[in-house]
Length: 185
Ligand code: 0O2
Image (tube, rainbow, N blue to C red):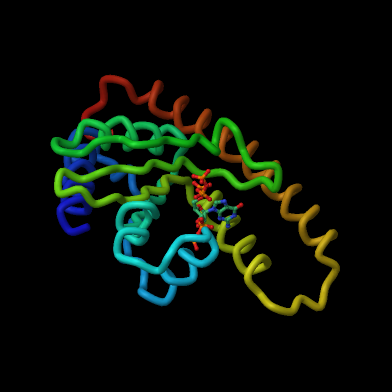
């Protein structure tokens, strides 16, 4: 995880140096706890073994990269696939193909040269806020409100946030077009 996050920091620093803007709003990472891994093994119908945890399940290492703009998500993704010694096992673009509940995020499963798997989630700030709220709804044991109504409202918000992300990107592109040729924009 340290090697991987160091590489992500390097990519982030390089892009910041080149453009004057850090493309990453924040980056979180974690090693899945034993309790959470055991629970996931049970959920997936796997034996609670080291092999299940490190070979069958691919998110023992988890990294979440939150960007301000949509284009930054894809810029970082394009740089991650170039990290030496890293193999891309799977990619899922829930941004271009949002889940029916409205979830959006870009997921990558990587395999390090030591043979460990890591899950990378790349998303914008609005996608991240939405996912955290939806996660609360999913995992909160008792919800006093109407779940169908909450789900419908979440979907409505997801659609509005999608539109806002696209508009923000367009505004940013216009600002950058206008500042072409200026130094350190
Ligand atoms: P946990 O307990 O969070 O680790 P796959 O077998 O690859 O098709 P999988 O394994 O569910 O499907 O992978 P996927 O779809 O890439 O999702 C990986 C993780 O993304 C999930 O972990 C969640 O943390 C997050 N995620 C996926 N869908 C949603 C969603 O609808 N809402 C929110 N809030 N988060 C989501 P797990 O597997 O649930 O386990």
